[in-house]
Image (cartoon, rainbow, N blue to C red):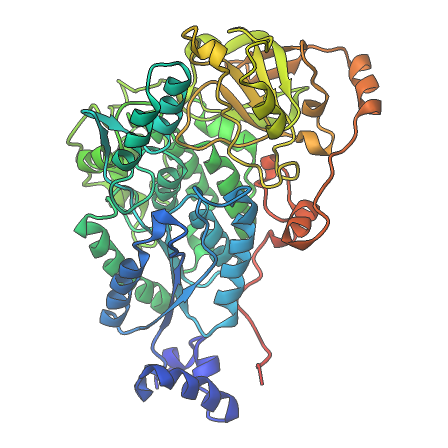
Length: 575
């Protein structure tokens, strides 16, 4: 055995000639593995978030097989393992409640087993940050293979986007513009193949973030799930992870400060989801990169949105891939001096080489820098007495006429209170009002659910009003749109000023000035603080652990004890 093979981490298990090594090898041989499987070749874990309860990831068994082919071709031993999957469309109260739990599952499974490297199979929204957070905290060689988007939705001759048209059609039904039968018919027309949301929602955004960070292979973001090239990429990823192990290239050497700066700017250029903010803050916290909301605002402020995809634009991910995909976007940003071209990648080539040959085949889908969809498309960070630690808004998906607005608050104390009041014809609300939703943040919901894009009251929709300012400590789906202020920190449930807002209070929003102000005197706020009572929190189970340790949105909503890298060492044997 060569010195390199003998030093592999997996040989701490399989290289022992005594009782412990016997146990490790013998039980693995019940799978039909020949003796030379344990000769010191790289042992590669395939972290699979497959589940039939996660529709976006239901094709991952075949994807994993392709990764295995690649690992075997490169001389490695592939071993597939499951971790908790996170189905955004089914999990209650919200998949975000369990992102950190899946990160723990991923981290501990990788560390506890005889692995030299790992391929992370991720697709549905939270599976990407969860597995990446977990792998980053172990820091063994790793790369991400995204599952890919569904084919474009089609309904009555028009493109329809995942999520985006759920909100549009739902409001059309309330406004009397669409029948319920038509609404039901659109279900199968929207989700018509394997894959995740094909709009620029959180799943597509995070697949783009993987590529922009350099932790996925070039081209990873946009290939449709059912396209044969998705499986080709998975097989190449299997080969590449073996090379990363051979060269000992770890996530900590890829996920640098420059990588996160690139990702923030790419997020603005693609019209990416606001959820990318909390996810990248959390990933950065695992690798020790100091990333803040101020970085998001500073780096994204002047980035033009180039990608004309729903919910900000008119096209979908399938169109994006055919137009040239993310390499075109990154090439254009690089040419404009907006990216770090020397940033490393798991391809073992710098960013500038990865995108150097990119070609655009449709300038309407991927706009040139001098003809953007939105001139300043980066996510905006707002501050003021209503959000001392920050809040976010997505300008590319908001209504221009509401970007500077003052209106009176219509307050909902909880999601249940909202559902009770919103359909009431007597609700005192008009086009100038500001809808305020409380107690939907990390601790208050718990889990910071995607309820911030509150549907408008039917009485407004029937007047032809399609957007008003909405503010909450919640998140919203990346597929959603509107003038929606999210992630208000500190949240209402821990005594944030959001929890003190009352019906009729004036709220000022000024996106250009990055301002969010509650126009109530400080003396009155102090009086309200004396009357405020904290909501009841969970008292048992994982939910209790979560609310006791979850950080606020401006810090990434990770659990405080999970931040940082704990490495891969496990010195004690099991028997």
